[in-house]
Image 1 (cartoon, helix red, strand yellow):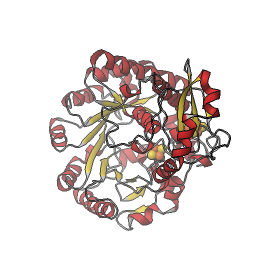
Image 2 (image 1 turned 60 degrees about the vertical axis):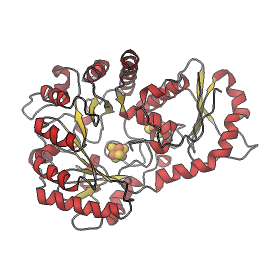
Image 3 (image 1 turned 135 degrees about the horizontal axis):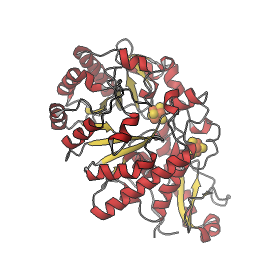
Image 4 (image 1 turned 180 degrees about the vertical axis):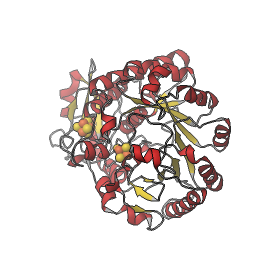
Amino acid sequence: MTATSQAALRGGPGRGSPSPFQPFDIGHATHIAVVEPETAFWGVVRKDRLTETLAGGELLDTYFAKAEAFRREMDLLRFHLKPSAVYFNPTERCNLNCSYCYIPESMRRNGQHMDKATVLDALDRLHTYFRGHMPEERLPQVIFHGAEPLLTREAIFAGIEAYGDRFRFGVQTNATLLDDAAVAFLTARGVGIGLSLDGPVADISDRTRRRWNGGGVFDHVVRAIDRLDGYPGYNVICTMTTQNLPHLSEMVDFLHDRRVPACMLNVTRCTLPGARDGRGDDGAVAAAYIAALEQTHRLYRETGRKLVVANFANILIAILAPTARRLMCDISPCGGGRSFFALAPNGDLFPCSEFIGLPAFNGGNLFRQPVQEILESPPFRLVSGRKVEDVAGCDSCVIRHFCGSPCPAEAHEMNGGMEQKGAFCHFYEEQVRYALRLIADGRHEDFLWDGWDEGTEIACAIGAL
Ligand code: SF4
Ligand code: SF4
């Protein structure tokens, strides 16, 4: 059994000061976590050695030696990133009416489309903006997002064709329009593809994801998954609701059986009232989620093939090597308006797609203003300035830098302000507990992409404590 200690940022008191660590019960038979919350420096130690560990020794010595370097690293990650990606919404319309969608129904029924010329104009402006601060060898990312971006297929495919050497492209789609020709076009160009599916059979998936007339789309999505068989650059998003929680482990069986390389098991974003109805109780969501993660582990042990649950892998990485994380909801401030932003079809920019239905968070227009000016607008500042230290109840949370207190859109719309929590606090706690239990048992690598740490500097790794 190994225990690992990995540090992040703020320095603590000097030698001779009281221990800076706080115990954090991870629900493990023999081990407990100790965390220095300001720096997110942590260790997993034997419970019967907790007192002596906190009194001094290798963990404390490492903390005092490395804290300053980790402070700088985390400060960079939290406060000095520049955007490197855009969620590009070429249409407000969608051919589906999913129960938890964050885009208002009127927009999805009657909203605007971008035409081809507008998509190309937007990509040109975005390219100019990103080139101003990103090195030549690093391509910015454009993720066509929705509503349903493939409703504007001709326009976005023209954009991918014209700008394929200047951006890394991705498409997040409901998969209903992902036919043979679309799959051939996207996979030939290495475009990342995200699909949505909420259950292993039509009866479950179609409860939340359906057409305006109530008809289901399960069969369409499964056909798209089959078309993508063997393509490494796709994943399936499953949104956890009361409708599918009892079937989450069957869902990972289904995805693994179809050789899906990665999935996300996401909580419902509760920004709009409609999404809150089926959100599920935190404890029930956590139990079903952890059971499904355990099922991915059993499948890996049986077959040697991983189904990576990307959002959970990101939490593990946030603990092991904070700057290597790939998703930006669990860092504070979150990535919205900071490491990426969202573009609406009329050119308006929002900190994140989650805000697209909320006019108060419109920061300005790509076709009329410089992007940098929009990033500094009051609506963007409101989101990019929301720090976990300022959120009531999160300010004293031991694991605040492994959680990040998502999501500002939920906090503002559901709970009345940026200084409030969002939804799912208890779920986030349980998720971090489980991640630390896996680390205590030395099982965590089984949940990560092979080679996840290539190019990542592991700041320190202490043996068993
Ligand atoms: S926490 Fe919310 S606003 Fe921030 S990046 Fe995630 S979804 Fe967007
Ligand atoms: S939301 Fe909950 S788990 Fe996350 S930082 Fe706040 S108190 Fe901690």
